[in-house]
Amino acid sequence: MDITADPVLVALGWTPALAEAFAASAGAGLQPARVLAADGPSWVVAGPGGEVRAVAAGRLRRDSGGPEGRPVVGDWVTVRPGENGGQTVIKALLPRRSWFARGRGDGGSGEQVVAANLDLVLLVVGLDGDQNVRRLERYLAMTWEGGAQPVLVLNKADQHPDPEGQAATLAALAPGVEVVLTSAVTGQGVEELAAMLGPGRTAALLGSSGVGKSSLTNRLLGAERQSIGALRTDGKGRHTTTRRELLRLPGGGLLIDTPGLRTVVMGDAGEGLADAFSDVDELAAECRFADCRHDTEPGCAVLAAVEAGTLPAERLDAWRKLQAEQTWQATRDDKAAAAARERGWRSVHKAMRHPKNP
Ligand code: GDP
Ligand code: ZN
Image 1 (cartoon, rainbow, N blue to C red):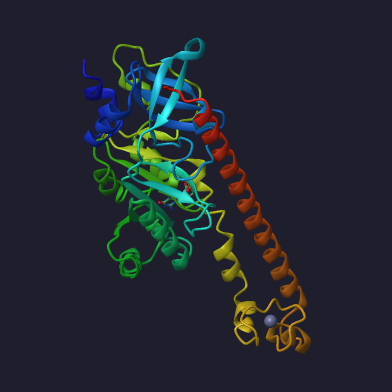
Image 2: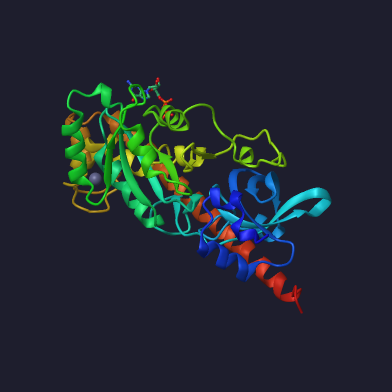
């Protein structure tokens, strides 16, 4: 049978473009598979061979995690089943058509892809709290950058006095983005959401803790979490005990819910800093020097305010601490990236000294 017409692959979102890339890259005995979960040293993949745990070939293991890096949930890979004493080995990454990356948002080396091959990114916010518009805009930008289509999901509609009004307000801030009002409690909007996730379409959930991502997932799943392995009717789908991060919905859509995406929200220190210290920021605008560190600089409006007693000294202390932490984090990211580049070069040199196909 033509492997590229395998019903399991099709159910996982296999496309003609992938079939082409696979045909161009595959060697004898290789099969395509999709990554259901990536947890540290190994992966869970699903393909014509069912659902199995896999390890990565050396080259992929050493990779740094940049946009072309290690396989992440949603990735399509080529695998060699049963190598290494029965273990399935991931040999290569097939080209990503889209992705979601976290990082410093500057497109530089600090980027880390956390999910791949997404059609939609569902940005979930709760209508019970306040909606941070700047954060929302940032997630929209991150989504566009990765090549996926964002959808704004306004959950907990049952908790807002005027959900339609609020939806209209937010829709105006996000041109080109579909807005869906939902309630995981009443079920409002869940069908509309499900309709966006047709067979083979992949969506990821993004949003702060407590906005209702799990509740919406359960609503979309209808009953219990369904494993991809259950797709096989010949009983060959093997079951693993890992938590899958790519779930198959009853309507044939695929939903990614991964801790990597959940923590994007928590890693938002940069923007949080500006939000939390708007008092310091406002004063800083009056400092003589644009790059004033509010330390010993002449004409510092922040120091002047502390002196005058209009800004508590603890506020400046707290601001300094957070600044230092951010600088440290940025330096650490740079160092990690430099080390990864170094490793990358070493493996390239090694490959040149020991050509695989002489
Ligand atoms: P997550 O952290 O984003 O996965 O959020 P959860 O799905 O765990 O939901 C957090 C809390 O909000 C839980 O107590 C849910 O029962 C509640 N919740 C979720 N969706 C809704 C909703 O649409 N309406 C209301 N009233 N509560 C909701
Ligand atoms: Zn200053």
